[in-house]
Image (cartoon, rainbow, N blue to C red; front, side, top):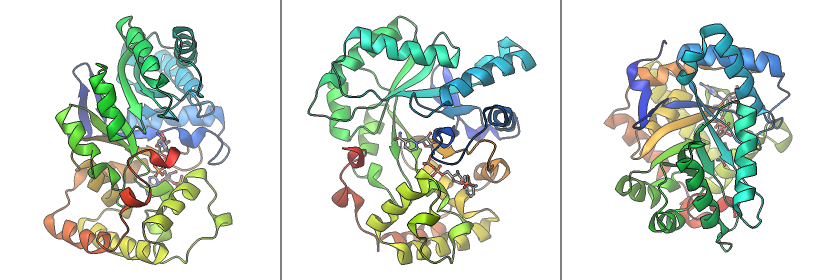
Length: 338
Ligand SMILES: NC(=O)c1ccc[n+]([C@@H]2O[C@H](COP(=O)([O-])OP(=O)(O)OC[C@H]3O[C@@H](n4cnc5c(N)ncnc54)[C@H](OP(=O)(O)O)[C@@H]3O)[C@@H](O)[C@H]2O)c1
């Protein structure tokens, strides 16, 4: 392992993770064509560098199968006793329907079998429509599966603060909520972070690098046209920048981040990730990995080698005060999906 100890986080008493998680939406097909064999081969490079934690979902194309294949090859190479070094966090994103025990069993069974595990490290549950309270039924069944040893820890993704409270009052123990969180989208700070701290829930952040827009590659660049945004992530987060304050303000942010990055001899991406890792309640930042297409392992390692100081924060704030409040424009975390 090449990452320092500060890269590790005790996510639960029996589960330690890398604070930068490898995001697998990027293998779904919406971010370029990924070859299964080179992709799985590259998963070793992430793991061997210390990036041992993966974020995936039932609907990210072959992602769960990649984990299954990676575990199989990993066991053959290093011995099955070392398989516990890998953490794989999947999601269940059901279409709206009645949440019977059978529906839940079948969905979790598919993930277990594709990933080649007896028990999911973390199951992150998503729900599309709060007016349908079936999400509480689903969570009750998932809690039973946890009790039966098929799920180690139960988590959510894209739930708002109000529903986190409903779920807590319903008596379901949730360890984390995965939400969009970046220098551009700071909605988790409005309500969510305080609730999480009071209730021992952590946040896993995505969209922190805005699909790659938060990097030197876009510094000083004219506003990209739609056709130039070649991945689903770039399109998604360009919309977010438009809602937040537009391309000119984003260029001001990139220029300020570049100044900070140069001071610390790191990259703009490093500053963006470090900023979110230091926010209250944040357990980890998920960074998308286009396995076999593009790779940033060496650069992302630098996140754990520097700290932002008050001068850096003050400079960032001079830009952020000029932006729109996305809590007003969009609503609480996850409202963009509803
Ligand atoms: N729960 C949800 O609803 C949800 C939604 C979205 C995402 N996610 C999770 O979050 C993960 C991340 O996805 P995202 O869409 O948010 O993308 P992201 O992490 O904001 O962006 C990923 C892209 O950033 C670029 N990048 C990575 N490290 C870099 C570095 N050091 N310097 C410069 N560029 C760098 C890479 O671009 P290139 O490949 O072009 O080099 C990479 O493909 C997903 O895989 C998924 O696991 C969850």
